Length: 435
Ligand code: CMX
Image (cartoon, rainbow, N blue to C red):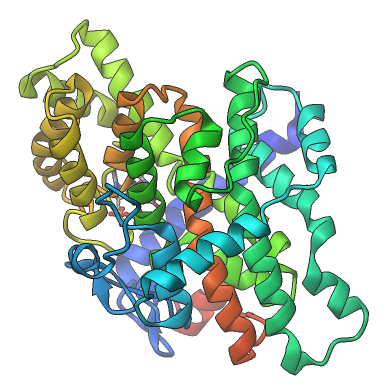
């Protein structure tokens, strides 16, 4: 028996209850600029970061350099031949440069990333040394860490670079890393699920099209889905766990590989990027337990209530900042309406969308009862045969690189300082309040 463990929980439980009570009774009292409740609630709403690439409005959703998702559909008019979905190259250009790219800019970026995309062999060897049962996100971060041997920033820092030049090797690392992520992700996918049958890249394809090809999905529709998916998951201003982690770790002048690997460990949490995996698990276990492919709204409501009564969250619903349906959910819904309106699982997601918000609202504590990006993404992938939901967060990670690494370039240009917010103890707060 672990006596320390028992003693710890005996000591901690009354303190946790007392702390909750303190927040309830003294939550509105000021501690400098902020209230007691602000300090205990994960810094939500506190302005304390600069992120140039995108800005989130709680009612309207994300704006990338001023463009909302519907506006991007009208303005990012760079398509592959016969295509209709935005290209990730274009959103990266917009986030990095602050202005819309020309077709030539997009093509140059495709070529630039293709040139940089070769992954050194030792990275594959590191992956091959892991058990195949290792979660794909753990394999992904391990591969990014293995790739850190290539960091131009780390080498430049070691050789004594002037701080005014930091942006240059950072940019090189950022571009190399983005270029190589699809190959790494596809390798992980084929290694785990397709019996190590790897597919060589096709340098003639665009970044997302080539990724779809290396994953083993060559249908035009799937590559269009990848273009949309990799565009809309790319950024969500600076305070979310993956963006903030990149900025925080990067602020210690850890190179982009170290900063991005840390971010991916945050994305791998079920309250953040892993939620897309959890949504599919939840939908499938609902259908399995009800023995139907299309549960009725009444059946869904009963299942939602059961989930809540078991002390679990409804995955894909809620958000720390958003207070309306996530426009990234709506844009995926639009894709599904265009390409797969009769899919059973997709229709279930739409029925869940009608059922869940009033139930969450009735709890009286959920600040946002509406769906987020993760509520819809998995069913689209499943429709095309990508049924391995444990892999879904890796796709999110490949996309998230675009925003957080563009931001890291700006951090170095702006000379952002090391991040070091002040923390206090509950004892300190009690003394301050005379409680
Ligand atoms: N189901 C059940 N309860 C929920 C809930 C949900 N979907 N969303 C929030 N709540 C609960 C919280 O757990 C919290 O309960 P306690 O007070 O008992 O701890 C209460 O409602 C208040 O939470 P909140 O202020 O509304 O939400 P937070 O800002 O603390 O958390 C989030 C935001 C996203 C973590 C939360 O809504 C959640 O857990 N959602 C499900 C997981 C999910 O979909 N995550 C993906 C988010 C998008 C992304 O990053 O990819």
